Length: 259
Image (cartoon, rainbow, N blue to C red):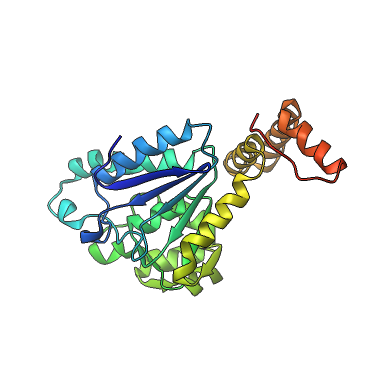
């Protein structure tokens, strides 16, 4: 399917989702989120896709929500219009495959919140992050007040949310908001290199590992450990487990088939 606000490319088991509204710095609106949700749902069910990269391109990730669309909205309208963003972000967050966000330029407001649903974040050295909603008399409403504290801790998250100030890539790395900072011209090659490293692993184990981490974080420790053990045990019913261990014993690279 052709989309108007995003680009979708799939090659060698890696899907690239690119926000494509350069004229408005990839501002996020209902159409963007609806198209992201549709594309992500299809990719999630595609067994040939092992890893997803989400990006906004070389110059900007996403400069936030479309304020022009929001400025005159009523509380009832916002309640309804917030649903596409929450649906899209939940679909991306719960995709079984690993998701990498490759971030250049601004990742602000909803753009920053979109990066939070990725499993791994790689930032270009020109990236800037922020949740400036407080300066508009509102708060981050697409998961920022919930996902950010879980990622970097409540104190640091509150400082960013309460101030609305931007931080640069190196500071984002220092506080754990991103996993890695690379030169801007190497952003996509580094993201693809990481994606290929993940894609070369056993697909079933990858999905189980992601599920074990994500579901475990929603449980108390004992329940999480039980869930991990269940995932661990189920992997012994896969062909990939047999191949992985056989390859190890034979001192050769494993050839995983994803089953």
